[in-house]
Image (cartoon, rainbow, N blue to C red; front, side):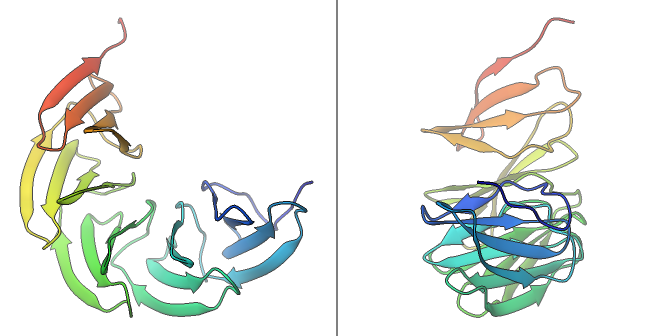
Length: 207
């Protein structure tokens, strides 16, 4: 089967095994039956969508390029709550048991209450966060355009900062007790680090 929206799909969709949830540049989040390709519902989120959604317990968390951030019922597309961020959202949010961590292109990390979207804390990072962060047992790790890796505890306090050569635009990828960093225009384009910020290995291409 195939499905066609009114504009391009830039973001990676998510699925619950039955339905595919696909954000589009035409402002809509589409829910498509994974077996037939039939449209189940679509919801207008008011601006272009380029970030991957996060799906947790039947709720989709997703931001747009105008800084709008939404919690959406995956069953019917109803918006449960929404919040306004300082800048456009390019990365998937990180969701914990009680909070949602949202990063934006102005360099702010915002902690929201998962239940209602109220702002718990807004942290100024100083550089755009484009790639998605990862959740560890004791915190959240994000990479920035300036090449910084920053870990925050679940209480929002900064645990550590590390710097890599280059800019971090790609999503961080968890791999067991380590995570993988892709650095653009750096001497170490592929780096593995542990969750304490120690370099485990790196791979560099020949010049």
